[in-house]
Length: 214
Image (cartoon, rainbow, N blue to C red; front, top):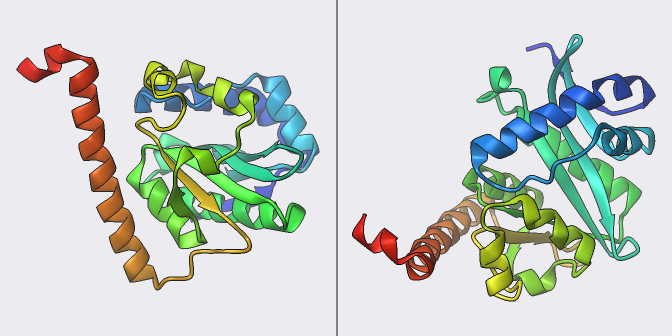
């Protein structure tokens, strides 16, 4: 495989439009609220050295960028995407690992966090030392949570006073990383994921009674 993963730099700004288009398509396919971004925003992240890009020659394969919250108290690796033609090759995991490495290098004292509905992403995060946490342990910056407005589940988040939703919150605390053996972490994540899905189904039935008859 000739895919190479780089810390994005100025020449990669040429991919900003394609990155935005890929993020939007991925959001529609997943039915979740990956925040839509403008090319200017992606360009800024690339110029600041706060993003990772995967390329196969000149072909865009994937991307991920760093966001900073509460004066560097929290950092998030956001907008993780992989070209559909390259999925199933472990590229998402490599991009995430590179973004994690970059985040730890630039912001060593920051807590890294993310929210996701994806079990594969939860497993990737778990391998990096993240733990499932309640939303109260994540950033409370209003700008971050306003990015959820494009998600079809946003009303669930607001009805619950931002305490929980269908997403799972995960956190890497540099002072308390998840050091359990990988097999145990994967088992715990799978069990936690099933519990979250079960709660989600029950909650959706509660807020939408018609589902009871499907």
